[in-house]
Length: 110
Image (cartoon, rainbow, N blue to C red):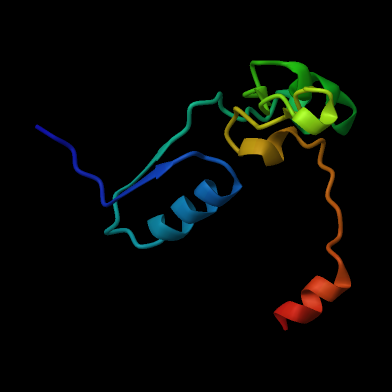
């Protein structure tokens, strides 16, 4: 017998997890989240301790390890783009760091 879901969410990053939570508030919805990365275990200190930031950023266990194509105006160097390969996405490998937005951006939104 086939199991049918109402909503299929690809990626359990910040947005996918919030979307799944909101959709599942309606108990009649069948929601499935597919995440390619590993779970975000509470005991995994590498994700939950800011001082361990360098490990998730340099480990293929937590990071997709994306690079740009060679950049012609940078002597053909590649730019490294860390992307989280874990439940929670890239927000799980950012060392709990955030940067306050520019006040002018908030004024434009208002």
